Length: 129
Image (cartoon, rainbow, N blue to C red; front, side):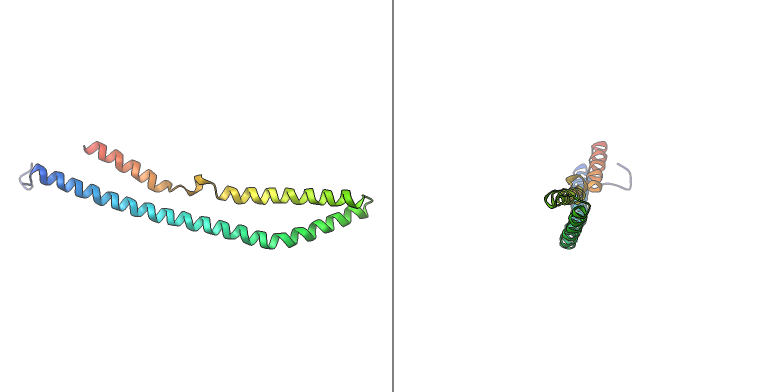
């Protein structure tokens, strides 16, 4: 103990526990804030997907009808032309669905900064114990 610090070991231990408790509260607040941000990003991604679907459906229907009509004009039988137009529609759906699902992967929703900070705090606590 230094001349300026005449606290007992139990007081020092109590202070350390108090600081650790405060650190944990701060880390929990950071985690809540980061999770809230990730939830906002998820909500935005879902809203964008819903908006895209609303405008995409009539656009795709018109596009596919035009494609089928063009294929018929080139000499293809109507049933085959409509089948090919439908397959083209499925390809578009697969691409858009894949992009939307990619934005909702769990890896992008993990509070990485909070987890990194908790690991640093745990390492620092191990050094001082």
